[in-house]
Length: 296
Image 1 (cartoon, helix red, strand yellow):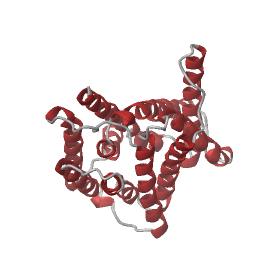
Image 2: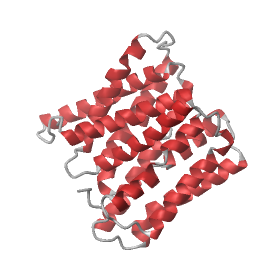
Image 3: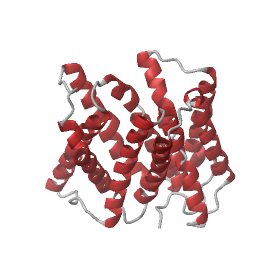
């Protein structure tokens, strides 16, 4: 049963990463301010998640949103990760922001080893190193333009991203509630930028792209993440989620024709290979006791 859950959870997290990765091409297409987009995206996600929760309550199959300390912490981590990453992109290069944020697998590996006293497997260590190396290679031609504040915010977003995964897996966290709280925070705290944005125009193309961003890129993966994160171990989830930054430029290439360089392609191959291996580990080996259990 645990092996089946490991496979299913890995596939759900991989689907989450692939859906998240469409954000780059959609945000490039929408000619509005980034924080305005973040507010509207949060509103769309919040509205859908609350509608689903309300429908479930009418059938007696759902609880109201629970503002426990763990759920609020998960929501805060989600909001901070998104906000810090957006701010970092404004101040430093996008490549710096991505590579620094994706120290998350390394942080989670260290946390599980030092704090939880879980000895990492050789595969966990190797795949974590390959993922970080692959991210660095994938964006190596764009690294640079160092900005101390921007790079610091990107690095901090790596810590909050790791916290999001770890907190969401805690046995007392209702990850779905954390997603609702996080979406609400994104909408409310970014609302002033939305209300003062002079670039907003609700032409059909922009509205369609915004709906795709809110529903397919944010809401659906939020639902999948809340489910899948409870069915994987934290190291596996953090490794598989690195498919997001790698697939982001792939969508941009397919739709906008921006071709990455040879070294970048090598980085893509490294990360995709590591993510694929991590996803298949439950098939390739028998999981250890407690492999898919939530964090205590």
